[in-house]
Image (cartoon, rainbow, N blue to C red; front, side):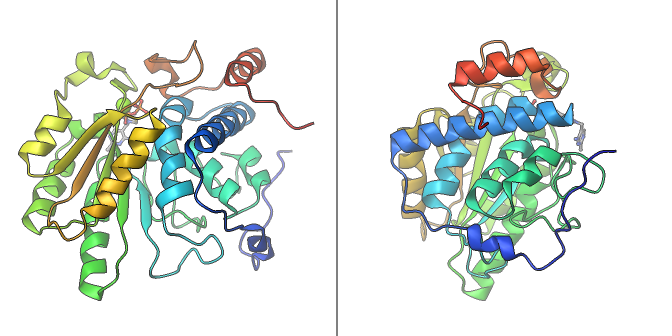
Length: 300
Ligand SMILES: Cc1ncc(C[n+]2csc(CCOP(=O)(O)OP(=O)(O)O)c2C)c(N)n1
Ligand SMILES: [Mg+2]
């Protein structure tokens, strides 16, 4: 029998675990991102399925966001004034789950039950499942940026100072809907919206250039009128300055597009830039090798 999740609908006494750390500095952020990569790989190996590649690639940018910039309170996931983070490329959820657990939204033990029948953490994020910290259901690609835009416009109408961050993937930009959101966000002058592009050049069927080349996404969003910054998504200092610039751009009347050149599978030599690691579980031997490359030691 699989081990099922604790009943997450009970009053969440575990929420007292949520700490209020100060803002982390670069070296600590890098160490944290690597530790979270270790959690991602452990989760997917235990589940014997899942999407590790994109999750490893986005670990740095999401660590900087959640540990340094996002105004949120794991003790009050429904705090109206909070900033929102939406993972439009929902399959990359192992990294979001690892971060939410580490920040205290739910117990870390839930990670090891990923994708088990009845468990809190399913293969794609779901609001119907009431996962604390998950703002939107995703996995059906292409929708998230529109939802994020709606949230940013609602915040403005309500007079809230919330920022809305939304990760999107390069393959999502092969669809039509992100471009509708890109047009509308500029038309409505929504400046508290930051799209974060996971520009890894990979997708489920191969390299994006071969499957359907999306071209220069930074140039395209710039042409649509977005305030674009193009960085390596593994350069923690560049990520920090980009989010700082986004905060400084409130009132400028334009949305921000943070184009992150990420490497799918970042940190594990045999996974890097290999589209086959879009999804798939590691063998126990591969996990051991990957953790050793990341310098992550499992707790006994
Ligand atoms: C609307 C929709 N169409 C098709 C799919 C099937 N699908 C799953 S992942 C994927 C491509 C993934 O590429 P990307 O989002 O760039 O992910 P990466 O491999 O870089 O993590 C597709 C087409 C889907 N999830 N949603
Ligand atoms: Mg991709």
